[in-house]
Image (cartoon, rainbow, N blue to C red; front, side, top):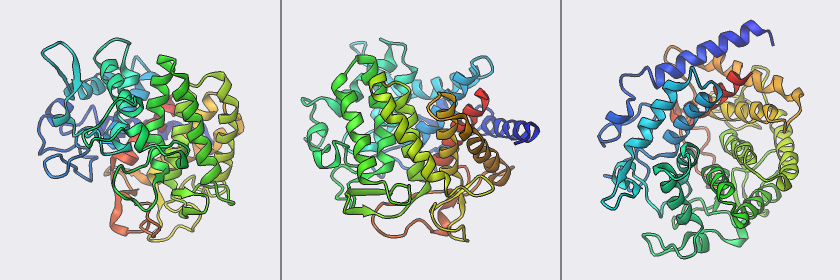
Length: 396
């Protein structure tokens, strides 16, 4: 692809990221977090602990937006300092110091609930990344890690998550919705919500047992949810009992989980994960459109209800670009990653924001992937991965 076209797309994307975050007069973390009647503009679900006891300011999609900004800072530390400060302001607004001097995640501010499930732990990966060791961020990350892995920890429902919500039948993956009686116990979404955080913290601690479990979890996904067409079912309970829809965003969560986990893995696990990543990328690339984008249901033609979708495309762009940058994918894949990013900017980004981000879909066996009113602009589950993909373009 010609350099001028790429440069123009990167510049346009950078202006969008600034407008959404550090240049916004609305999305100001220190003002937003204490006021539970206010919501980041990318929070189209507007979840509040006042009405529903989960995921307020600590929502996973806000975490993904913030993690994307931190990725931009890492890609360009000098120019990206304003993003670092923005993310720090967000994290600090969620943290409270106790009388004994310890630091805790302020549950009232955050909307974190220890019995909700996978979604409540995505932002912990950012706390882990932000930590410089024995600081407030690391202290809180350690506590959240204990909630997920310590057999002596009993949550607010009287359940030990790593014993009762992590069944061997799911390859010791955590059930996606804890205690919710979901039709499919495992969703691809959940492996991204949990495994990058667990892997980063386990690698820092030298927790070999947890690192081995993470390999088992990814192996179960590859063994259970990989379809003959090279793509992955949205969710499932076993090989014989799957939610047989190929939702681009679900596969995007899975791809991002792989490359984020691989970043911290010991060498003994890396070759197997490289093979799984290549298999995954080869499978999804068969369905990439000439414009670089994927439809919401990847294996079906784009229609008025199955639009070419922004969040899944951004995730796959990030996965491919990071995989190439890290040397886990051959450089021949680079053009597909760049094409996805540039196509997304050219086709879906305008003065109103990033369009055609699908709001949500339940892995329940029904086609809830083509609801026209679910296509949003600047929804965090798309804007966050878009910022991550933008950070990878900065490395280039």
